[in-house]
Length: 254
Image (cartoon, rainbow, N blue to C red; front, side):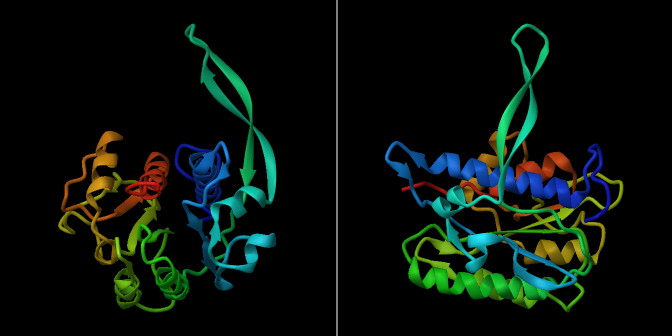
């Protein structure tokens, strides 16, 4: 994840961190109501590398793997000022300064202990499903740019997908960040066009896309079918943004 992201000045880890932080900011906004923030979401981030798999949040959020969205709203690491470019309505571009909360710091320190990471997610989500049986099932957005370095994660992924609430099984969506030139593969319905055994393993590990996510992806201009799995391979910048946006869409907020 220390390599440069194609078409940007950022490394892959920096770009993914920006997308993740923007996604968290959007979740906070979606949960904001006149009476306060409603905890429609519980969120955790597990980072893994040379030091193994661990809670990737710091400060107060580092005390527990899953935190309600109101706790994230109250505890960013810092709030930065960033520039974004907007259409001025007259054919020109203007820059606007915005507040950008940062919860997650980019890191790329070697190693891909995928089995440890999936096990850590499974341990947290098994308990969460037991205590939230009427909730939308948890969604795991797994981002990687390399093969597992601590064993075959297939059976662990299968176990993770078996946990469920009364609304359905845990969804495991996998994103492989671009490591070499080639067209991104987005939400395939079979492994026939995948380039190697590693890609086919990630496809096998991925849950089928539920109907509401298929429809949302179609609204964004993608072409998944109702047989598609939640998997993107060789993803570049645009695909990473879409992956996080699609993956965080619950069927309903109630």
